[in-house]
Length: 253
Image (tube, rainbow, N blue to C red; front, side, top):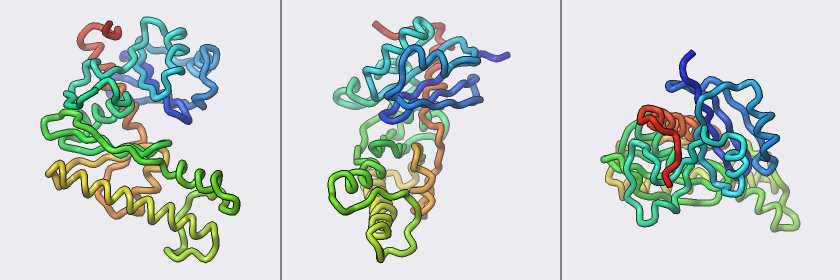
């Protein structure tokens, strides 16, 4: 059996686990991030055999539990981890490591220049230059964060289940919120993309979307955008491959 590695993407809401070979992700599991603990991790990983693990996290306090369980098997992605791409950014240590993983997957699987859109609690846009350097990005509120905020901060607006609105002119409160979510949010994404492509001077940039709402949002945009729900995990897989090829899975000091 080929070498197996564990991939861990710790998000604000959920933590995604992938079991992968060097070429593909062969199994998936998920768990609420707030419920992550050493015991929970052991239960989640039951039945999976792997030689090493690679992790990215936007929740620093969740990382020690993984270090406790996985020990020397675990590589925690950092800005100075070998990734096969460069970084041109004033404070590289401040870049979310999930965003670096996305940039790695973009470079190795789709090409440069390019843009990754990651639809999570926040929506992030990350830019890869023609010479395969991470050069920056955009952060905006996530779609569900916006719709939930409307409900939580107003007395009369309900929480809605996202779906396509019947028309742009909403004839109920719920329909009006759906129109704002679908049409308004897609308009924001299009506007940001246009500005990024203009500044990048690359009308042919590779654009890849990932994250929970990516497929629904992109489907209604009429843009040439690839949707890859496993993009972040693929970035971790590629980082693990590079580390294994260099003969070390340890974090730099």
